[in-house]
Figure 1 (tube, each protein chain N blue to C red):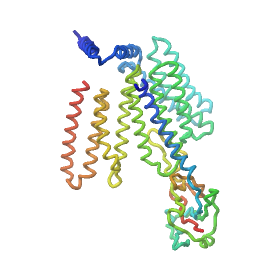
Figure 2 (cartoon, rainbow over the protein chains, first blue to last red):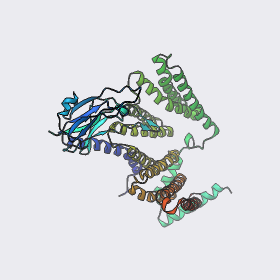
Figure 3 (tube, rainbow over the protein chains, first blue to last red):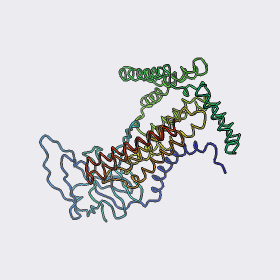
Figure 4 (cartoon, chains in turn red, yellow):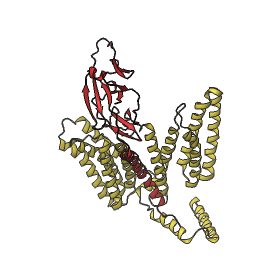
Length: 168
Length: 329
């Protein structure tokens, strides 16, 4: 059987269309079949790079250390949140409340999810974009990712920082 | 007797031989003749670029620059309606002028300049209009929408007017749509970094190459050079980049690359494409240099590595000339 006369036209147009379909399927299909995340997590926002990191998890408990700020530097407000992975909402808690929690500081939760930063491309020549933020944070696992609605400054130095999973 | 008539006699003689041996059917010979006859001597893009054509394009680019400068200098003083009229209005006016001129045989070639202005100004005009309407123009979502409008407009224009220029811009806007739509789908998700860009460039190159081949078989063969040239440049460039660099190298792509380059060099003969031969040779040089520096610089030493790269360059230069003289001249 002879191939259709316009086979090269069909193939040439099908290549980008197929790639768009593959990208869409690779994003949306695993999201349908992935299990719901079970473990909430604790994070801190505002303990920026220049100010030094105040909070660390040691032996399953949140600890605080004194940070000496450089002269002429006004540190941002440091806040601690619990993020509910089912409702995708954060609730602020005090350091004292956070100290009562047992935290698993492994990057991956027991059910296979991980808190990661987005790639947020700005495009490349001659295709440049804005509006996608590289400081967005995602819950990644099971071949999919979900954008997290965290309370934080979307700047490099004041991003939210994952502290630990709440193993209940 | 001129060179052309000698070639014609020779080709007709070859056709007779092929027909006698049953290697070419009457339909194939007639199809080749009709394709050539239908190419149309008046198709502006098939002509080599003359000084008048170059001036048309330069004129078009200057008009576009004038509009950009006018808008940027007086952005704060112009009313919204004026901004839209100067950009989108100018683009639509240039497009309509191009269509009107194209319908008159005497002015057909000048119409190219107006279509060129329209193609440059329309994306700007649409962006300004959406910006004034309160949309964030820089987002991949809106860029997908703008490029989709342009693809639809230019494909429809091609369907009505059958001009090569509309196919050319359909390909350009289509590429824009492909990149912005995939970026829109991905959003800011993790793990879609430079490799995702490289894969998209790779497939764009592959698509250009296949479309370039298609256009070489029909009357719009003026696009073949552009598509094959950019196609092979994108394809091999992306494949080379995907190999990455030690210690993060991707061994699969590093091993695959020579096969791809020699495939392109082989295809340069089959397609009689000088761009395939040129870019194939350039990328082979780049690959040999990369691999030598990456793996052998420390073991062989820098001077010996340079000697090897130099010898590789000479060998590729000779291969390039040999293939060009034997098959493409």
